Image (cartoon, rainbow, N blue to C red; front, top):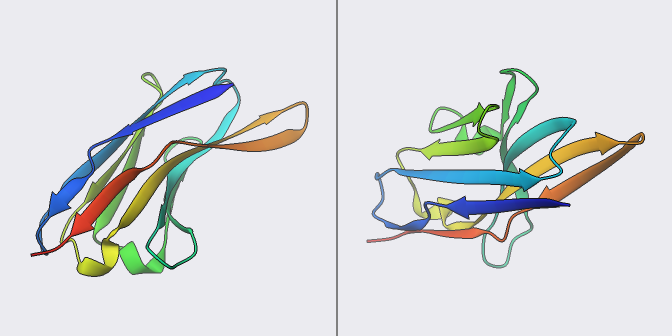
Amino acid sequence: QVQLVESGGGLVQPGGSLRLSCAASGNISNILTMGWYRQAPGKQREKVARVLRGTETDYADSVKGRFTISRDNAKNTVSLQINNLKPDDTAVYYCTLTKISDLKITIYWGQGTQVTVST
């Protein structure tokens, strides 16, 4: 099993910044990707950003230029630096880890951390 623990959410004013972090533990061999999804009230969960093996990254168009994902392979952590926050960024942010084992790909989810952007 894989455990993912997020931290760093909170209430921030528009234009502010936050840094979300996620620590992975357990059976974390053969990791394919680590990343972040979010789900706003009344909306479907959407991919925000992910980092593949090495340093290749992938972002949703709505966050390009404002969000930066980084991964520390030695510490098994992934972080998301969020700048210039907008009210539309309000959501629960979920850390994800995808791994392959016996030719089967499995995605694991953290419990989520709330980000609220409001005055």
